[in-house]
Image (cartoon, rainbow, N blue to C red; front, side):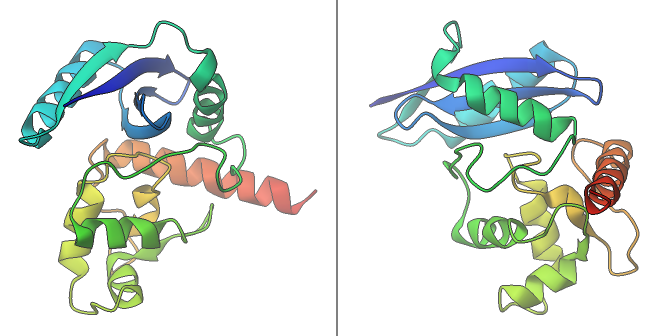
Length: 188
């Protein structure tokens, strides 16, 4: 069976984003950050090839008619520019990939509020695996829904920034933007 996926690339002042939507559900299934569209396309193609199953192959095509996905793309741009926290469900997404453990971690990350940080150990405790902080870190590194699953809000046990597959500099920028926006929103 062939599974049709559509991709598009957006650019913002913060960074670019490569978005992949599943035609079957119209949900976002992949969001990667960076400014090199061709590099990101190659990474996504390699990832999909690696994750093809015996009965499912992925057909990745450029999104030509964006009307169906327009609101999700607009909302992702807002999210990327950190203009404001988006309400739950503003961008329909699904975990098309990932192990049960990774999905458990990613679902818990959804509970980390805009403008806040927690440690890998905190997440490990929340999912009932208090000694699995490093495994939580690996699950964060495997997150394919940048920003929507906010692994950028997870820090080391010393509360310092640690790895972020899209760069610690970008992680710091995203957190600073969220902090500023949280302060601005609290003044309203």
